[in-house]
Length: 425
Image (cartoon, rainbow, N blue to C red; front, side):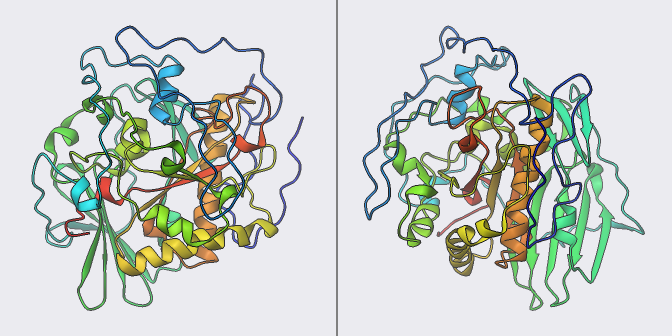
């Protein structure tokens, strides 16, 4: 089955857009059902059982009652059900008793090592005339497939998709320039016509470790500040930072951890939900890729399942009549950014389980990018406040190998407490 032609969008499509490119010898993404797959394996010995599905109560303030979930609530538990092997050299700490969630970001962010924030303009760099793609490849991070303008690589136990966010950040810029910094890092500065500068520092592997928005009057809003972790920079291979955390055990109902957009009657619910702090203590600040690629780290913050917008078979296009369904979410983001211009939101893309794993990763990444582009181009959310990542079929909402529209979706998390200091918030 071939995907139907995508409907027109009111916004420019992401670079390299269109349906997922097929991989030779494999069916296209979201195309033909694959052969029956092996049943999920039980958790490994010594591994705590995943958080069971829950029957949440109907939402307060109206909305449809949520059906029983047939997949685990936490993404890290979905990986455990799928039998993903752990790093035997560094076993995960034992589970801790469930505790009430922190009352604020400041209460949640109890860092084990203090972070001294410095301006991103402070370090002297060597300006280069043109951008030089010098991203090094981590040891063991083999390229599995190039699909359009995206790379699918092996990272630890998973295949992950990598894409470049520079196109979104540099759109309509009056100037963009690059500088080389010590230890293989690069500093990118995007100058907007209104005088605002967005400064991003990437490590030698292309991971965003620091990002700030500098206003014309010199005020600097720190969006990402992973600290000066020389050990992370010097580590040649990938190591999931979630291995340093005990398994998460929620002490709140599922409906307080996941907001299903289809159940929302009052648009203010989006703000109230995104404004809530992490569900556990945050022990350190993470780089953008550490959040993108670690389910256990992401699980620390709550999630909105934007199931009011789903995608056609094999498509990353947003239908024109679906754009208004983003308005309430965009309004919540705008309100939060009015209170704290340094907020960062992660847009997650997903597919159903039909088709090839690798093509689905690229397709889901384009879905996340399409939502981010719409939030910026239609509703004015600054692109530097949005991070995107596709996860393919890894974290199904409905646990089925069959075509399922509910699995062709996006989700949103406010990851600010994971990537930047939030003292006083």
